Image 1 (cartoon, rainbow over the protein chains, first blue to last red):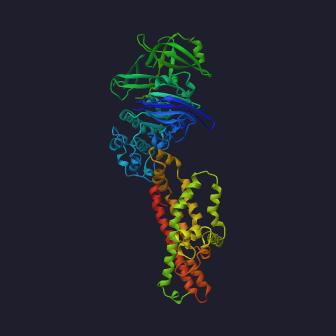
Image 2 (cartoon, chains in turn green, blue; image 1 turned 45 degrees about the horizontal axis):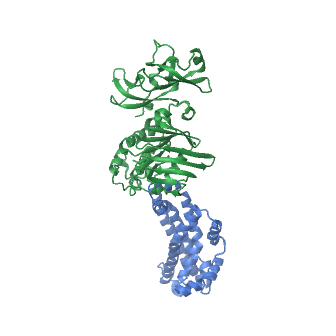
Image 3 (cartoon, rainbow over the protein chains, first blue to last red; image 1 turned 120 degrees about the horizontal axis):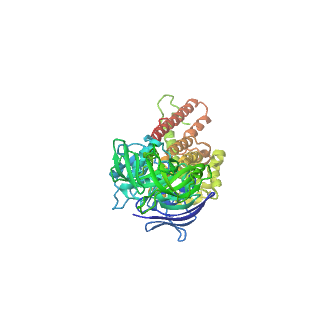
Length: 370
Length: 241
């Protein structure tokens, strides 16, 4: 498996690109940031479709670009698979012709990817004889993924592969990308501005703002960071928790998710006990009480301690609470969004012991990453 | 014009067949030889920015806007037996273009070239370069991308350009008669035969027969191109025009 290292700078119109990061060796690295932040430009430079002004890009031992040594491999020599935002299938070739177009480059004998497996995995075996114009949007994108995989890439670049699909098609493709991640072991650089995709798919997040890498780290860490809040988006802002399924309560249709802060009750999750998941709890779905509340409908109440208070410049503010249990080795951060007035009346301040109230309904299937 | 030409019956005469076959030969070679050059020129003009691009564009279009006789005369000056390149061609290859069917084909090709380049260039402009970039990321060299992606996607334009150029070549008169002259069996194509007939009295019927042959030929060419274009369109988009 190859590691992708990127250290480039380039000027594109008004945007000054300065990207510096490494991909995970075997997992999914997400390039996250708003539209227009320069994510696609960076990916295009990695693929060799555009040339950075300065810097160096390597893939394993292979130097793809080095302005110092005057190395700039053409795209066809880079062993980089590219799944574009739009499918870019060849309209004059059948699905099979599209899939096999890059297959003569795939000479790796150690490849685990053969034609039958990939077609099977992507569920496109019944489409092989069709022309691309007779495919649905979701099918097209699956063929595009298969085509990139069959070219034997050392790394797979996926540039917002779901952006042009409607919500239904998106949920149709996501499981395939998860399967790909788990079954092929090919490192993936996944570009997206959609928080839920990142949380569901990625292991590492590289945050891009105005062309620059502003943060890199594990997804639960980066997505919970307060200083990146303006970039991750206020509405979606929240904490990401790693949990594992502790049990199911079939009578109530609930599942128990164990984590460092205790047990979280959520609507039943279709996964076996012991299964590891990632859940996102949005700040706006968490409220604060000073004493353990009684007589309320909220199931998830966790004692914790206020760590930090952050102004948002509006009537609301975000409060960081550590809800880790006393014997837990690591902190367990949770964000709560309260009005400034409540914060004042409750006299919230760092160090104060509080109770975090999480609405069970706030944890839906959508935010359950694998 | 010889009297056999004017048979009066429906059957096509031997001389008419000779004129017809010569026309097809001249137009066919004209198109065949200018097609690669036409695609290359369209490629240069569509995909590259270079000094002299405007000049090249203008020269390519020149035959469309200046009198055909002038084009024929320029060819004569350049490629005549004592012309700038003509004498060299004769000395080195023993090749003579004036007064030969090859010369007629050249004149037709030059006159039809702008039409071909325009049609091919339009189709090349329409080829999505993003799709070509995708092919590069799949490991294809620029040459392979051109042959396997660009060229097939240009097919409608190449077909249109070929038919346009073929039809234009069949009708070529001014440049041909100036450069290759009007020699029976060598350079006397359909329009030249028609012209010859109209020079002598009492040949109205024979002239009309040539006109009809020309029309039928043109219609057949259009029909063929339409059929091919539909087939290509069906493969590319699934729509039936």
